Image 1 (cartoon, rainbow, N blue to C red):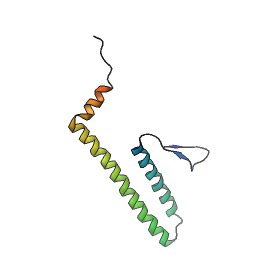
Image 2: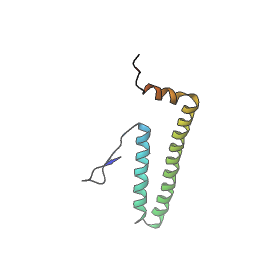
Image 3: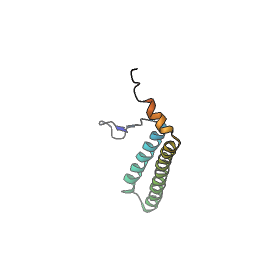
Image 4: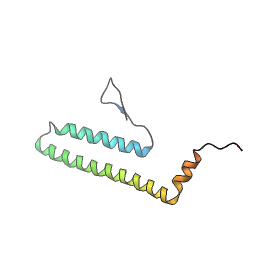
Amino acid sequence: MDVEPSDPDTFTLTGAYENRVLEALRVAQHQVRLAQAQAAPRMLSALVGLEDALSDQIAWLENAAEDDKADAEESGEAERERQTWRPLRAA
């Protein structure tokens, strides 16, 4: 995630779409934490709940990515992918 130095409220999402979703959730989580500092009691309660929900969603996505990597390793798919990046040897 890139933050423009001239405008700290601007950011750019990069990478795969799954990564972009995680970055957007992390930005939202950060904004919720900032908002909690000046929130009235009921809003604070709602923001705390939202922060918890965002944390759960972030963890869910991170765990899914780790599980997908483990599945790829077990199936041999990850090794086949690594092989495609190796240069061919001259005969």
